[in-house]
Structures are given as C-alpha cells and as structure tokens.
Image 1 (tube, rainbow, N blue to C red):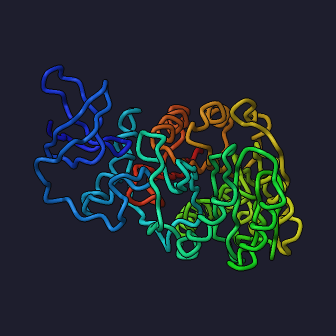
Image 2: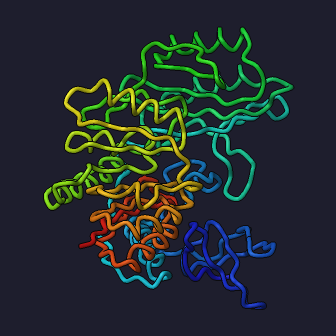
Length: 416
C-alpha cells in the first residue's frame, strides 16, 4: 500500500486498492509504500518498501514505537506545513475561510509536564508511554522532548515506581511537573499508602531535591510549595493539576489574550463589568488579566479554582477576582450572566464548548477569545459565533506538542 497523506491524528492514509476504503497506518510518510497488516480501518506497518525524501532519523531511540511522538521521522518544513493545515482543514469542514497565521513553534525548553505509565511484568519494571493505539508500555530511560529537569529525574522516578508497585498493585501513573521551585511529583495508584511508600518517597524527595511528592490523596513530603507564575501571581497548583504543556506555549496564548484585552478595554462601554474567563483552570489567563481589569473566573474543578483564588487574594496590585465553580458543559453561563462583560475568554477541554458558545453567540459580548487544543471543535465553535454575526480575526496555530498531531488554535472574535 502507498500512503496518500497524513491524517488529522498523525497516521498515514493508505487507500485499500481492493476495497477502496482508507486504512490508517502509523509510520509511513506521504508517497511511501509498505507491507501492511490490516484489521478493519487500522493497519500496522510490517515493512517499509520505499523511503520519502522527507524522512529523517528520529532523535529518540524509541520514537518508532512510542505513542508520545508519532512524527519525529518527518522533515521539519513538511511537518510544519501539515501541522498548520490541520487548522485550515478543520475550518474548511465547517464552511469557514479564515486567515491562518504561520505555525508558532512553542516547544520552548521542552514539555514541563509528562505522565508516565508504570507496570510490573514478570518481575520487570516497564515505565514510559503507551504505544500508539495500544495499551502496551514502551519502556524508556529518557524523554528527549521533556524539560531538562524532568529528563534528569527519570532514573529516580523509576525507583519510585519500583517501590510503589507490588504483586497486588502492578500499575501506576506518575505525573511530573517542572515548577519554579522544583519538580512536583504525583503518583496515582490503587491501594492505601504504606509506611514503606512514605519512607521511600521521603528519601527520594530529599535526595533528588523535588519540591513535593503526593501519592494518591496523601501528601508524602514537601520541601517547598511548588509554584508557577501567571503574570504577577505565583500559583501553587494542585498535585497533578493542568498546565499548558510548555512555558512557550502558555506565553504565546497569553499574549493573544492580553492583546485582545487591551483592545477590549479601549473600546468597552462605560458600564462594562470587567472580563470573564471560562474554563479558567488555575488562572493562567485570569490572573494575568486581573492586572488590567476585574475578572470572573469560572472552573468546574474545585482544587485549581482554590489555587487561583488563593493567588488572587495574595497578589498585590490585582483588580478584584471573583471565582465560580461550575461544570460549563452541563450548565453554561447564561446570556444574562454574560451581560456587561467587556471580553470573555473560552479555553475548554478537547470536547469544546458548544453549549457555552451558543449562549455567547446570543449575548452580544463585544470581544471573545476562543482557545482550543482540538482544531475540529475549535472550528465547530467558531462557526457558532460567525453565524451569530461575530467577525473572526486571524487564527493562530500554536505547536506545543511538537512531533505529534496535537495542535492549539486561538482567535479573537468581535461584534459591534
């Protein structure tokens, strides 16, 4: 079979010459031919028969197996053109023609948070990422795309995993976040925390100079509160809490938000009641915006919202920040609740914010910033606003997860 193109999830699209259907196959580049073992729509590359001029050698020793980076073998310019096309194609599927800016390379110094799966099999520890389209774990000794402090910690994380896994509890997930104070390590595992867990964990934290170690719901040890800065504010995010994948990615998205806010405040009518941040998380945008305007931050999870609130109350010079816990997928802010806002920022999970966008579409809010980690739902939600008369500015594609099919999109919508 010959690969025709790379699909939206990073697999090659191989038309079946017998049935005419398309088979999704990891590992081939456009124009390359290979022997494929197919099962339904999914295929596995048995042998590559031809090699594209765009193929390069991956810099990670497990790149061909690991599901974390599926496109390290693709030459940079071709990869970046395809990555930008994900936004263009998603918009076109919704009937939207938009100016899509050049792809922002937001790899920065590496990913500042990763989650490693650990499992014991036959007395051997496997720790790493899942294979693509499989539950098998690719065992790693290094992760070249991670922030340097995380890379250096992998041997110690393997020690932690070895201590946590037992014959009765043979799987765990260890999440690591690189903060300004040090590494924040969070282990999710079934079963109660034991004395051995506490002793081993405490020793590792002291030896490795980690900031905090949490196992399940229990804080094992904390040398210093791990914090990240959002503008003026320093936030103690909850263990395992969400952050943008890279510092550079967060900075790129925050720059779009802050530029839009300055525009919104310049043209806002006198009675405008500040700005609203929906799906606010721990405050990456809300706390920055609070340097210029009062903010209402809405988030579904209690722990990140509490971290946001604490930082807002302990950071001098910020405008008032009001917090509201609400599941916006089930109960979006109504048109009445949106009334009077000078600007709204929406940064939902991959499923998008369809119900909330429908309320925003009828609200008349003059400026809406839409950010999404899924081009398809970004385009769907954008179409809702455009149909309601909003003008869409240029779309900025931001590549935090380099060598993968994951892409952030952001755009500013205006009305009036």
